[in-house]
Length: 397
Image (cartoon, rainbow, N blue to C red):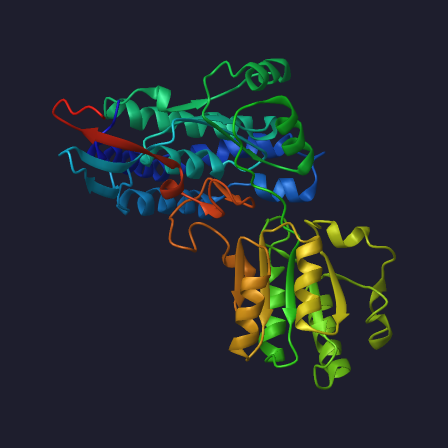
């Protein structure tokens, strides 16, 4: 049963109001989670924490999605058959979506907002470390739904144990149409091997910056450091490739390393560049190139050509984001078309790979696969299509 755009927007308006009205209660529930998070990795704690700014960000995301056009019902193709039938291909909701995620309570708002505005039902399976935060946020969701005579089935939180989760995945007990796993490769690979339900993979980052020999190096430094301004996010920069023909490379590298160390980064290097600065920590082997750091580590390397840079990125990156810094637009085009990532940047920070920054208001995930969609996934991507054919008794001869 379709919900009208007006009713969906009224739900979202009420939810945004409730988030701000109850921000202290949200923060208090989050504090309960933080008190039990002492044993967690620092990056998970960073993702777990909710403060006034984070609550405000949730409310803003809801408002932005509310103001966007409802994709449901959009006509993608229209055709009048010679026999008089009216044919339309229209956007319809995807169906029932399960998202499995760790540590980030804001996903409970952003994911569900994106799914709901597109007419879907969503099941939320958050990590136990964020249980109190998530349950309170879903309570506010249900209040907004009930206030507008909409079933709470549209947003459900699954507070279930491992065995029940395994049964859900293996037997599709909730008649799911799509699963979105947001977590490490271990979680993604487990779900892949357990279920026959289609997946939308929100995979690893391991993002690269390539600094060309025609780059504004001060700009490059800013982009590298901004790409490392948050350590626990999937759009952070982990690897920096410097063209060996950069004029005065040693002097410029010294400035970059100094700035990185001032920021508290652990600056690593391979043997292509370690001789240019004694402060670089040398790493051995190729395994590090495939690693998503999610930490203060950053790796520098020297590379001879643009083509070799593209080849290296395509071999090791997670397919998330990649940046070229250059004043040569032709080189930038070659890089952007050649690098196999969801978002490819010319003279801009990888930190913009985010639904809110790219005009979606909120996102449910950042897809690193090529089907169904690629990159940030908002309400406009959480849809399918259906053929509507209206006739007057026509039969095919």
